[in-house]
Length: 225
Image (tube, rainbow, N blue to C red; front, top):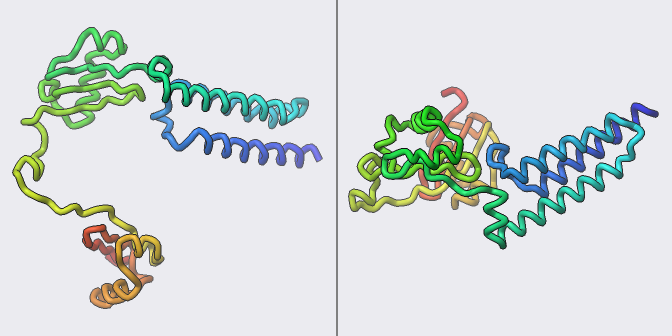
């Protein structure tokens, strides 16, 4: 009975955590703000209490979990409405490089060394700070970089040329299975698919991947390729 009770508590805590994380949203761990990270850590601690200690009622951590979630929702709402609260919770972005020159004051304030800054821009394929128009340490801890015009890749706009949008690639067939929703989303039907496969002397089961963009571009990979 004790084992069964422990299993039932673990199942209840599991679904409770699923509901809690659903409420918090779909941010990736590296994009969590400070308040969200604290909430996640507290939730993980509360989750273990009713499973490990039989003397504690599961209702107590659930009540505490509810209070934490309400607090997180309230602070998120206030951050949206009040700039001071948002700045306190999320911090301000720091411009570490401006017009090719590192800003010592901002580097010191953000506690980022010159070696760390150079390493980060190298990871983004940039050989030297002089190529950077602006590098900003965002509130989520990531470094966003804007290159100077002469170091950016040429675009159709730079060449005064028009380019048709390819659109999103829809995975119409994956591992021999047709996704009717994706097929419809790209404006195609079963008859079009059958006609395409006949041209390739292939069947649905032979298809590893078939994608079609909104612009009509087809990409096909067969199982034996």
